[in-house]
Image 1 (tube, rainbow, N blue to C red):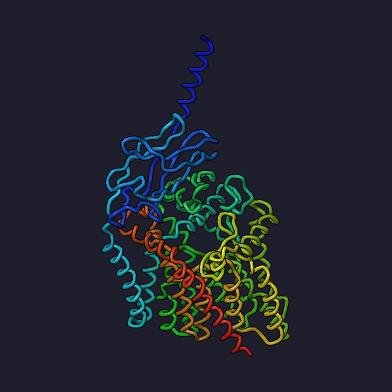
Image 2 (cartoon, rainbow, N blue to C red; image 1 turned 180 degrees about the horizontal axis):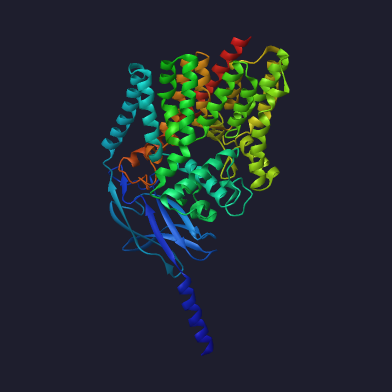
Length: 560
């Protein structure tokens, strides 16, 4: 009798701790075809499963008279999984679909998934018509309006777009870095409160701005500062790219605007510097009205306009004979993204060649370097943080794995079933030494800098679309307008084909960016781009690499 009571109590306890919850996105699912495929490639539905217990198997089932299995997956220690399931006629049909998750005798709520035929072709066409019309209208106005009126118009445009847009994954890191600072936690990877791959892998100054932005945002909205653990999306193990889901409040536009403010201002700093060098009209058309600059500087939320503005200021000051200011601006630019630091050895060697070097010229470097080191040291191990920075930038990874991204010839290696090559580690250092030797012997000018950046594009395994912003101002200074257009079009075509445009809408306005009927057509576009290998390789590898090589050849010939 006692054994029976113990068994009953244990059974009741097991049932009390057994819990599974099922939800899905999008709801409803707008499917673009009249019939669901019986097998093979299809669009996917994302299922979110919360559960208790680990080391057990869970099974997603559909109902058709009785319950049938779709797929099984293992429980993880987080108690949450994000599962993507292709929508096929094997388990789905137009109309209401009933689904659940089971594990032994434990079962979830029954989820009703409504699958309807999409009618978003017109909506998607209208979206592209509006986007393209806006681009051409802005370009036309850059030539028709008086310069001051156009600058005012673009100021409003940039600032109006920024709160309601963002590349969701990258915006998460802009937010989390500041939250970690406010909570006294190192954002640079040496903390057990978040996975190592969610570290801030760039120089340390921007997290300080992020912290100030979040503090002001918190003061205005009365929102509390999240605990670092709460910014780790539970689906991290199964869908790292969904980290943005960890923080998406309705008041996000204010925070997004504050986070992007340095980038917005840097776009206009670059314009004003260019307008003094190449003229207001040219700077307005090829920089302010440039769709790539609008995307990266206002919509995306990336640091590249900031580092580019400092690099441009540095070069212009050096050209004017103000080496001290040139070193200062280069160091400040490198405090956000490393690449402007590459200018400093060129300046040193060029002044040595001219016999005009003085220690006073490099003095501005010391406070900037000291500030960066102080931030690293204050928030943890200085040496470890520096190692993380060097490793993350030398061998960029995604979720801790060495990979390829953007517009690079290394995509071809994937077609050949070959792993990507860390070519940058082997080619870039000796090439940079050779360029330094050239500068010491022949002098430094703009072509050397452009040659170096394009060489980086040829050897780096990550050539993200935002990197192309680095080159635009320097092409204009060199009077290479066609190059500035080419290096703007290449990344824009890549972004157009590789992104669902709804992904750039703020989650506070459109949390489920798959929900619009037109979004499924955006996903169809992505499927075509990534599955039609000749198209993907042509856009991502062959065409950009060909232009990189042609640029290097042209620069080399002009210096010989």
